[in-house]
Length: 247
Ligand code: ADP
Ligand code: MG
Image (cartoon, rainbow, N blue to C red; front, side, top):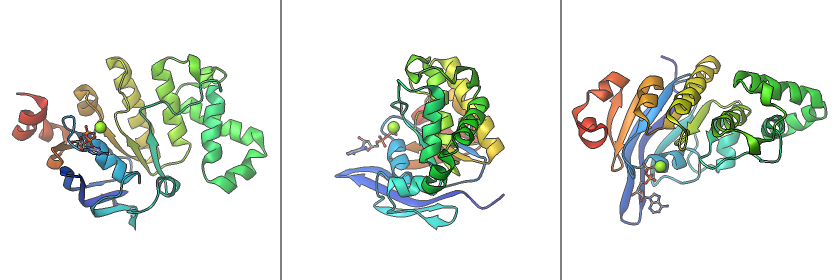
């Protein structure tokens, strides 16, 4: 196994009297999909927010490809190659699919890109290559505002990929989608992440998606990591069944 892209050790966060995350440790390798699951209020989003720089841990280590990122701003962490998708859509409704992806490409790696942007066709070709990967090239000219929700989610995935991330953080990426669409979005994510050796950490409530797509699963309950392992190990874990899976 290669050195981890993400290494988390002894992560703690409390809000007032609430211990939201307590002593959480895990690692994630390139091209690996890790699902973080657990009941509402378990601390999943708090973990994400400590990884993307929105929240500072009270204690613990977060290393991205060996580099300590605790205390860096969200922007600095994004620049180091941590992409994310948002629960609220991050696209501009009146701009076309291609323009949205071009903007994401433009904001990646600032100076280099602004040079590249002078050659508009290069940026356009790059955007179209991303749109081809997500199967949206035929909709490149359509405004994002008229897209079906599942298509919009794919555009957001392309925009996250425009930053050439080493690590992609997806907190409930399929929320609000129909079951079939959820599976399709995460299948596509898995395919692209494996091909491009991107590490993916995602939360998900749809167990068909989790057990179908994750390489490994970690389970949080009331801030603590109660299980970690391969999908079939986690599925058969008695404590996980009791607190989350039911039965
Ligand atoms: P999950 O994403 O697993 O549903 P969260 O990380 O959102 O869980 O929440 C974990 C716990 O921390 C909950 O008890 C929640 O109420 C609390 N919490 C989360 N964010 C804050 C905050 N900004 N201020 C106070 N309490 C918070
Ligand atoms: Mg959450």
